[in-house]
Length: 331
Ligand SMILES: CC(C)(COP(=O)(O)OP(=O)(O)OC[C@H]1O[C@@H](n2cnc3c(N)ncnc32)[C@H](O)[C@@H]1OP(=O)(O)O)[C@@H](O)C(=O)NCCC(=O)NCCS
Image (cartoon, rainbow, N blue to C red):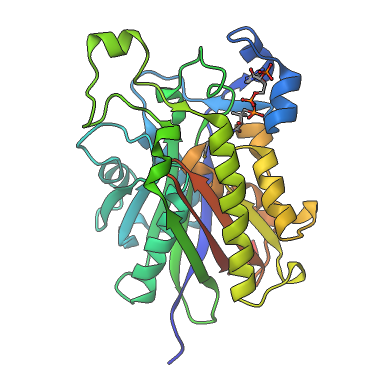
């Protein structure tokens, strides 16, 4: 019997309608379109404005897009994972709410948090479940409402982040398509450089910390940048080497969209031409857990059965990794 691999068989996506452009940001903080474009590659990002709507709203929309496109019966879904760094609430699972709302009544569900690497870690988790033969249809959703913890007076963060969601369906494959290899890493010494310090279990929010805005996300951009460039390029290069792949064997690089310069550095390290590098950072900014599935959503029509894709991500924690993947269908 041939080995079961974990393939992606459908993709959906959603971004909110409200567009926050660099021009509008110029009126909010001391920045300008030219600086943001040349330093990050971002032109605009989407923001979920409706009151009372959280990450699950984005996740549900992305999942519904997938379900409507494919005619998938949600009752057949075995497991729903919501990869997110911005869950709706503390204690209550965002994935459980999402699964119920989309009609996945026979599924169990949980949230998975690894900052900007959440979706990549989710791919690893889902693939292990599928390869074991335990479950057959798993919906992995990457969704983040980053605007919920961004300080729109802090130009080091507010220019980068946006809101969005992408959903992918994983199913068993016996043609050898899907996840081929992975290299996942983390290093907790990095957490001081990118975090929302207050509001978790270490430091609950007090009146003073709230006034000082300490519940917002903070980053030491330069240090995060250096670590992202080094580590993402490193794992991408290593996964190519250990699978005896050259740049000619690679159809696409799907890298976390945090800064175009970080993506370019990773592509350069593995000698990949620009046309093979998926890019949508200009439209959405950094949507954290949603960047990888939104790339698949935006590029789905160009992907062909058998295409070799190198996924790479880096995020807070620090967390990072790379996955070598074979695409399973023509759309
Ligand atoms: C945040 C980030 C875009 C800043 O870019 P940078 O090139 O590192 O910029 P620096 O912080 O070195 O600042 C360079 C200059 O631009 C200025 N500057 C910083 N932010 C600015 C902004 N938004 N608009 C205009 N000028 C800005 C600085 O004050 C500095 O000016 P100076 O040279 O006169 O002192 C970049 O560090 C980055 O992308 N980091 C990683 C982000 C990331 O990946 N985060 C999520 C992890 S998944």
